[in-house]
Image (cartoon, rainbow, N blue to C red; front, side):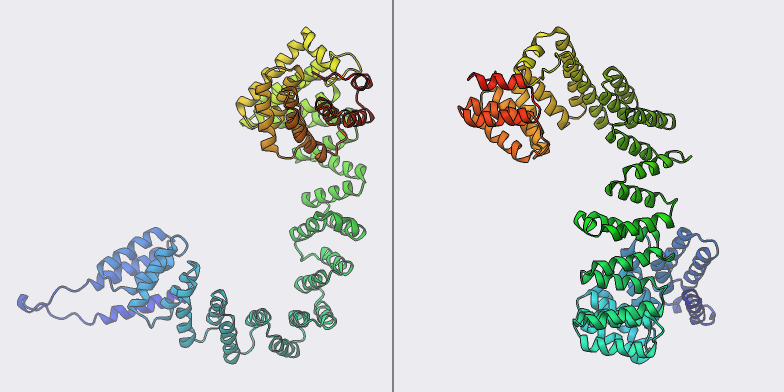
Length: 598
């Protein structure tokens, strides 16, 4: 239609030029007018360039040349505005406005100007444009847009009035009726909304959306029984209508009738015309609230099974179902799903790593190594996979192998954060090697452990390697909290570089916040510095936050209390450390003697 209008305007311009008169004598010739004929030719070439050859940029240049030849060439302004609407909306609005200024009676110019204003977010300016279009042209789309503009500029009653006017001109149009229905509910005109909805049901009882709309009015009026009847009639009218089933589900959800809600959701899950992405989104929401998940587990389990049976090869569904199995304690079934995924030609690394995580949790060391090796065959250049191999070796106590894996991962690492993590892990491995040099039953936190750490040359050599690795880690990432914490703690055990240890421990707690392990380190460094009151305050916070059953925290708190002369409370916390598995001989020495731990 727009092209046809453009051609008609072109012809009008052509004939408006009139017949060519004989040239006047020089003294009789008026001031030279705009070159309208050249402008017309340029405009016509621009239309052909755009419509036939699809050369938008070339067409724009021709339209601009047409305007340069004749600044009154309205069609060229119109075409430029249409061409620029998707690239530069402000320029498009400007050109459309100039076309309207040149020919305010042209409905195509006015319509493009109004639409451009809407796209540009200038709704207030668009309102009078569409008000004029509604007065001059019978087009229900103009009524719809004007109603939307009224609503968007907080004039909902004007929007309803213009939709009433549309009803009188065009009869009931469903999409305008739905818009008016929403506005009537929004403005709480329930009686009018009820009359409109009842009329729509009487006129088109075969449309499910009319019953749904009536149900929404009844619900807004607090007449829930009638609302439920109407919502159910909607799904009875068309059992394949996703919108009707979804409206019924939402109704039950708003009433907190979760049994009925989940029953309707199950019906939606069985429908082929309800997208799987919507289904998985609903399932994630249902399982995101742990209390809701637990209280409605049986029905959610049916939903999970339905999804899995309907979409057995969908990766998202497979992952959701496996996660559900893990949550329900069926770890072996979940593990089998992930193992099956690793056997596929397009298996992703995440499937292998999930198997590794589950097998690690089940303490199946052989299976962990098997799937890590299989993953390495598929993804030999993945740095994080190599790092995970190192972690697995660490757990098994194969510390030299772990260090080799971490160093291999370093060669593949693509960012400084990962490099810092790898150097931190190398430092941790060297520390574990040092710890293995301690006699069985002697822990580092005990008085003898500290003594041996300081006296054994091999341990000192291993700890030197540990600290060198930590230094490298902090060069790559100064805020690596795990490294800052471990570095500070190990220095505090040796009682050296305590000023630097305090700086690192303070930084770790400042970054990590309420991490009880980091707070424990911070407090212990303060204790080693003799700042007992500060240490007590920080350690009390760590104790209140910890739920891990750590032996170190009550032990350290006892030592801090003893240093402050609070012997009775100190013994309570030492005994708690003993109950949680700390070295008995070390606890006995603490309880037996009054000396402070240095």
